[in-house]
Length: 218
Image 1: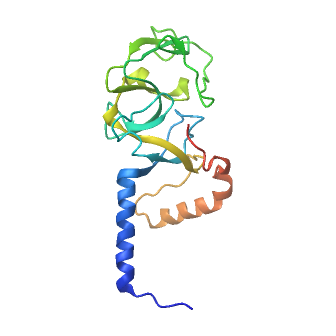
Image 2: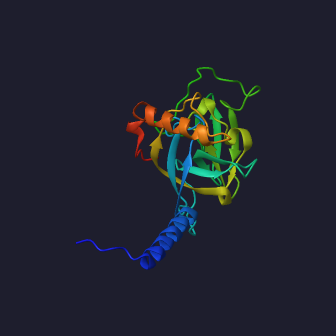
Image 3: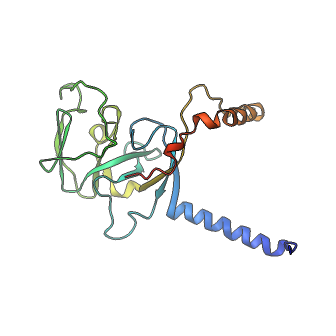
């Protein structure tokens, strides 16, 4: 038997749910999306993933090598980047002809790491393939993109401060193949809204990367 819902009790429940959702988003988990190919194959352009914002908030907890982390871009804190932590404070990083070394030992890359450009660029032209050695200063990490030949990272703009790290990537919850011809929401918004709506409804089966949903990021 169903009973009518008393709005006096429903309103506080809705407010509590909203407060909990805001607190979770602010302090526990947050969603981010990927717009570039720099982290292929771990993260693809067009994917949305969740981040554990508490991962490095407690005393003694800090990013470790191989963690995929989200952080404020050192040269513009208003921007947010996602990369893989390679080394932490006190460690030494060197790249020789694309081979990555940490503390003098060859770094074993995860299976998602790739090198698409067969060329090896000399140091005089670029630090992409020949870099360092550099020692990571206290309170910082060294990060690289998994798509090593197509990533702007610590080779270009330096180390990442612990305090700018926002969290650790968890898993992919949505993956949509980017389409430069997709309609965009623009003023006056009414007609573009319907174009966007019909575009996604029509392309939903083909553009969604079903096999990527739920991919654990490691």
